Amino acid sequence: GGHANAVGLLLKARAAPGESNERDGQTALLLAAENGHDEVVAALLSGGADPATAAHDGTTALHAAARSGSEGVARLLLQRKEESEEGEELELSAAPAVSADAVDASGMTPLMAAAAADSAAVCALLCEAGACLEATDENGWSPFLHAAAANAVNAAAVLLQRGASRDHQSFGGHTAEKMQPDLLGGVSLTA
Image (cartoon, rainbow, N blue to C red; front, top):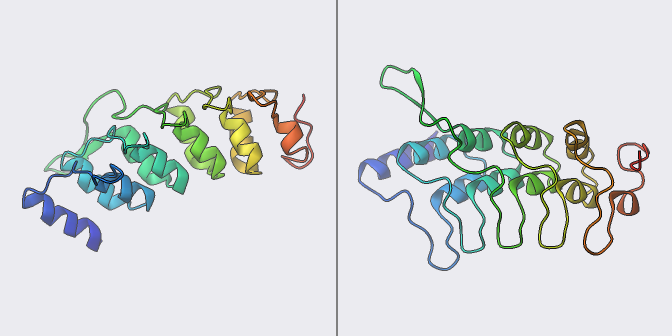
């Protein structure tokens, strides 16, 4: 509603949708994604905001949507669709506008963020978009390890269904079995 209308008016007045905060590099798109404002994200994308733009710490709008569990925003960022004047949906590009495997300064991907937030729907969406199940952050943690550390049962189940390794070990020797032996209702994670 109102926020999207306000953004639309600002864009018509030639506001720059990609402007970032000098302090941390956050953009309006990143903040809208973080707060799950689907309509605002759609308006900013239509106004020319670049979904691949990252804050100073490497966080993209897709990371923010994954952390907040906003499936609608994540879908918008990945699909990059727009409506024509006649109301028909148009593909803007065949490739996603932002990588499902974008990494922030600590090597965290959107899939890791969604897993830690126990957002099964966003995990599934990112997997469909080609996110790497075995990507690791700067500590060697995979998306499944992030889910295990957060006791994120729903996300862990999605990741396992998609083929994530149950046995991944971080650089520090952490495994899902050591962190959460009862993850997934006591089902053994060591096969």
